[in-house]
Length: 478
Ligand code: GLN
Image (cartoon, rainbow, N blue to C red; front, side, top):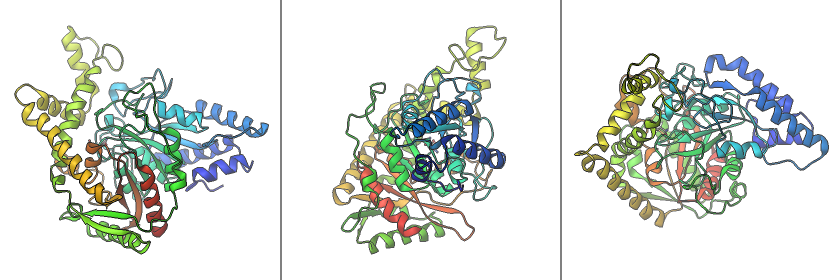
């Protein structure tokens, strides 16, 4: 059985047609993880007991001839910022080492209810803060296409595990690009749904006005299947929208003739790697050949997106991370003489350097006297960005850009220069600030064999159009 590029459909079909069992399938994936993951480092924990319990439940359904749910027997992995009941959930942080989640994240529960088999928890940057997975409190993840390179971040384990055939699909989170950027670096599909489309109940919060949960898959169709399962209102998350969930799979492969695709000048400026540019331009040509009208557009405030993001995200992070105080749960420093020493030392010993940097930046941006100059200003720019996208979407159905300015960089290349690391998010942060959906689709490789991703951005709650256009790009690129 070849599981390396196994899709959801194939996995489900093989189980349904009794060509394999859900149990045997899970075993094959665990074998592959054992063989491959010592080089890659994608998994932080395996949840064998839970996986095999679910797999035998599916096998009983098959034996009984009962109807099978959408993800019956499909082996999946979960980014470690998503809570999984009774399974260690660390958010990639030492401060949550050995923390067993008391309940399931809604997205995880929905996957499992649809028959998915949860293989384990995936490595990520600590509290999802990073672009390379090098900020994990445990160990870095290596890019399966070149082990000397990063897989991207913060959902590096979620992208690398799919790319290396160690899961059929995974969940990740995207606050400033953490699904789309690692998807591009690892050569898989990564979808960030509209803000509110997927419940964040049980997601360990980084920046609540920017956090999204979404899938990594081999194909656009699989991404559509995954979104169909996890999307929709959840009474446990008041920010989840009460908007009907359409049939996303029906959009995959629909003709794109006559659709208008916007290409913003600002995303093709200086600093864009020449091979990335060539691959993305080839996708534009492919869409034109498929009958799309390509429209040049302009998003002039793009240059403010990085500073705006790094103020809003750090401000919200400084507030969200206040709950890790050593009192209620998580790491507590031993032997402190006073309460404030206990707070201070627990946080100092438990958090890594990048998390501390963000807490300091965010606290500063929110402090009296600087609030108006930074936080309020950033919120105003956010409104400006949203207006520019509104104007653009009055003319076009979707917007096409490169996902990242370069292919995957080397491990260690940017660790001493946070600003350079932050600049890698230049094409992804805006969609989070505006709340619109985005997808990254593989569109080619560099001469050295590194994957390149093209990004499609859509209107609020219009993931359907993204799937339609993304499947055309995928078809032309394969
Ligand atoms: N790389 C960005 C950051 O470091 C985005 C992270 C994310 O989307 N979680 O904040």
